[in-house]
Amino acid sequence: MPYFMPEPDKILPDRQSLLEALYHPEEWYLRHSDGINGHGTKDYKSLYLIQIIDSIVSEGKFPYNADVRVRAHELLGIESITYTEASREANPLSWLIYMAQCYRHSDMLRADGFELFTEEVLRRAYDSNCKIMINGKKCTPKKVGEKLYAFPPYSRKKVYLPDYMGPVKIVEE
Image (cartoon, rainbow, N blue to C red; front, top):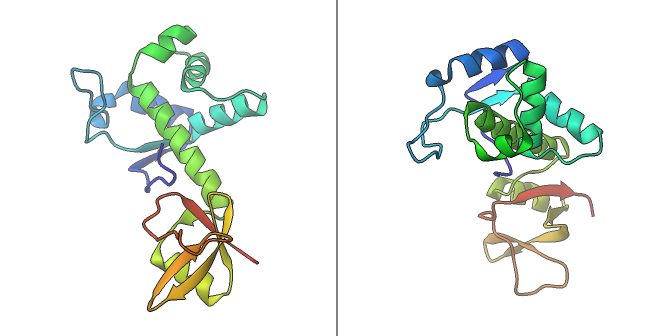
């Protein structure tokens, strides 16, 4: 699951738009004969599925994709499905659930102030005399020669460069 999702190709704001997408998967969903989604499948963000995921989390449960699919079948009025069937069979709804999980996670990170680690983020932290939270460590931006690096605490050799793909957050010292 990627940390940050790109802008979706389309946002499905409600139950009805989700059903319409499911009734016309040929417009956005590619399926290879081996059952693996291929390049060309569009990124749809379903706000209705994200609400279902949030409701499962509010019940104190982890929102496994199969659990979300079983719940979605119930709420959408689609033929009921068992957990085992939901976990084995890949279909357009499974793809939308996976995408909803990705967008939900990405949105939560962004809401908490996390962003991709870029040269610009490193420069902002350095210029404002702040630290960068990377992997739970408050790293100090330092200039070595003409290049900026993020140094973890008590480290003189290990550094993080902006090619690190995980989420980072600028924090006050």
